Amino acid sequence: MTISRLKMFLTDPELLKFFFLLRFYRVITKFSDKVVDLSTTAMLEQGLQRLVKDGAIYYVYKGQTYGEEMAQGHAMWNIREKALKFCKGKGLDIGCNKWPLDCAHPVDNDPGENAYVLDKWDDGSLDFVFSSHCLEHLEKWRDALALWSRKLKKGGILFLYLPHESMTLWEPGSPWVGNDHVWSPTAKVVSACLKELGMDIVEVDEGPDNFHSFHVVATKA
Image (tube, rainbow, N blue to C red):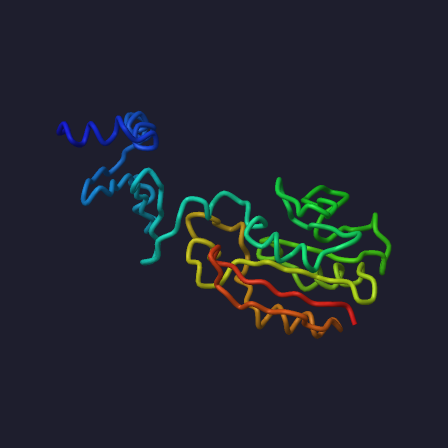
């Protein structure tokens, strides 16, 4: 390793961390234009590449480059301000993990309380249902939307924030999500389903936004 490359590792915390990981993992390390390729052989076999530039980590897959933050699971924060304009009163955040919407009761994936089981709430009792990056995990997503709609009051809001189909690393079977994502939602398909359930579409942003996502807002007619 040249002095310049050693200096690069020692002055960059992320690179220094990876430097110590090299002894445990077989890593292909390349330097060019201040970009360090730290892809493992396993990644490369899946068509995935990991790069470090200016202390930030990026992933390249199918010709598209994404920041590491795309894999951290906090999608809600990218739509929070918009969602809070619609989601007021008594409501749920379904599939929230560790990041529920401020005003919502968090519903994750417990046996007695999840996307398919909302028995604690009477039909027609909620002002809103919010869900961020959850529907793509559900095989019976139409049944879930029917349930969520049923729990809303007349005029209640259903706010859906979902991964855009163009985001390659969120495709079913990709290195990041594997089989956790069972389908790729689109604004057209989701909106059509909501209309079939008797809901009126209030707002659609087909995206992709800066988090490679889109949103659909509907109200119960």
